[in-house]
Length: 180
Image 1 (spheres, one colour):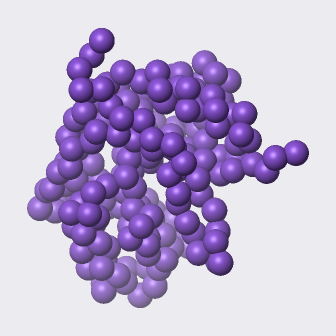
Image 2 (cartoon, helix red, strand yellow):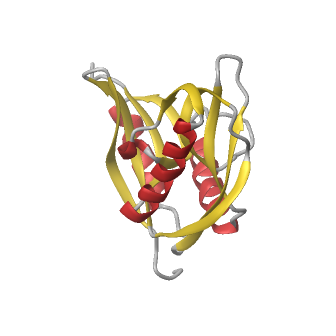
């Protein structure tokens, strides 16, 4: 029996975007009493969370990713906010409304459901998690916006290695430069 992997599909960022996100995270950390702040290498934009999958399911996920036909697009990060939680809030950097991003996420979700994956039913809310369990007096706010061109997305494996949450890209799909 082969072990399961905890998987999700995400957009990873270039170093410039990561640097800007780290500045936001660090500013938030300075204003916070406590929290678990995202590691630099773990900053990403989740498209679909898949949960525990075996190698057979991972092969289906890769085939679904390969079937996506969307041209590269730009995303803009323009706000900071939080999801309220009793044990401390989840703080995030938010993405400006973006039709190509939603099209990508919808195509993935629809095709995965047709392939018999059980996915969360809640509305997609694109965000980049900066930290969890955060107690702070910081306020949700608009920020000086910055953008990145998205030309690929990845299948990511989530695991604890030596007690550290680690995300590893195990497959990548380049976006098409033009529609067929």
